[in-house]
Image (cartoon, rainbow, N blue to C red):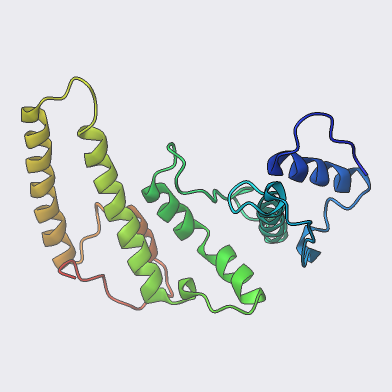
Length: 199
């Protein structure tokens, strides 16, 4: 049992619970968590910052961390929150692509089918991540206090021309400007064709 000296928000309760379990040597048992019983107070059951929500998030994080450690994954952490400013959605797609084998193994061990075991789907994810990366570059070019309408128009026109070039290259099976797709296409087990840029 731990005493709460100051506030008793859901985050505070979850933090103290986690510390308490770690202090008695149960910090590694998160994969076995099957439920949490509460008195129904808002601090306990709040959908965003309630103690139960925080404990569940911590349990999921610890379970995935164990799987990554067991697989000797190159990455020792996974970013869960796609709304974080410094982590664009394009970067999340890249991370999903890079961790596809570990993610597939984890979900299959939980009895869930995983599309990233399908080579054609992986090819599509690589293509989508690469296109999103190009869009992120355009987005960055359009931002800034010193930008005026002429700069914005020039950036959009250049990007439109770039899309035309990318479409032509894909029609010729040239993946020069698609690094993830290029990596995937070079894999010996890969058998599917390139994504259709017209879809």
